[in-house]
Length: 460
Image 1 (cartoon, rainbow, N blue to C red):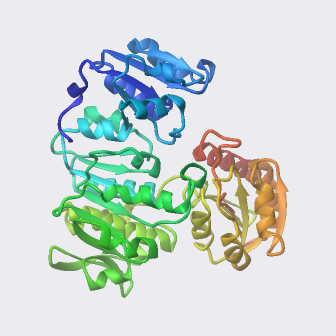
Image 2 (tube, helix red, strand yellow; image 1 turned 90 degrees about the vertical axis):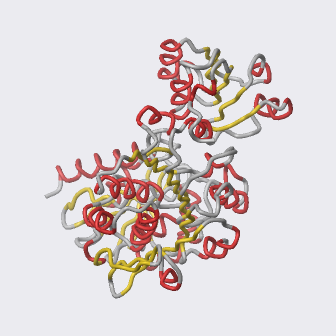
Image 3 (tube, one colour; image 1 turned 90 degrees about the horizontal axis):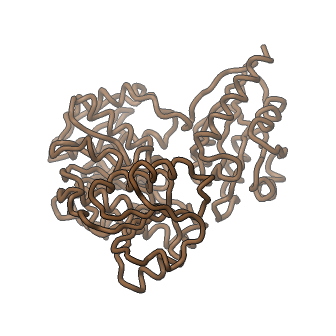
């Protein structure tokens, strides 16, 4: 349970599977306590210089390449990094031998000295919502840290957490696969749509991982649920705890909703107004729902409506989420590189009223691109596809609008610039991950930004 501290791992012998951000954070947190740490990854030492350096610094062992059952020898705990598949031989051997396998989230939760935890999951909007909740605590002058899938691993922030700290976590389906005791005081489910099918295998399995966020809730905890998303709303009966809703139907219960172009709330039996909708700077109807969800979570933790409203007025969103880069020759260029699945791409496209030249592509996660066709037909003048998924995207969208193919994002920007007219928007909204050409969506978005700025230097 939360509050036992890292000293509970004193003398343990730990194998960490995955030597990226989560695995490195785990190793750093455990090294003063564990007798033995083995840091393992399928990549080579040459590909993971940060892991090699950390292992040298803390005296950990490394095991790069094949992850066979022999790695289990002398190990009494395995920490599996998010996204590592369960069919890795050493993990299969661990399960058969009864060796405990947990994730970095679960391990860090057990060490937290506070139970003031807000956890946010969903297919889209997690990072924006988590960061907005953090800004609400900042506005209140309250002690809070933001961590999880949003950028900093929970293990990285453990030194900054005390019993009065509120921990605001973005939690992915990968992280929820191997929780055991993880227990937030406020659990938020924003929405559900098909995603990560290449890992989870089916929509049903993916949804089931998301619902695990609520499995340890007590009756006096809070569940914050969408009243708009049909998959979330129909699942409300399976959730323990006090329920708050965001969206139109929240007006019939408790939560936050839009009434006469104002955000209003009802919680703890008290109703009031937060802000006028026009004062919220986040673009798009989806971000209005994210703002409602964040407000529910903050109010549940007894922040004042005034502090919640102040953050809503001030917050302008995150990079790579409908981020306006520049206007070049009358054309607006927008970076939505974080739109890594079809549902988020559809949402991004629908956020604009002017004609769009869409840039889409990258590495496909699985599932169909067909749901994009109707919204692309209504909103887009043309589409430029690139990367591994270019052929599949072209097949789904041909006949709907003009489709051109590019090899890279910068090439796609140049192609889109020739297709766009003054008053249009060129929108990077990939509907795919970046992993065919980039280390992450941030790097892809930065490449888009540089290509646009270069274009601005040549077009007046």
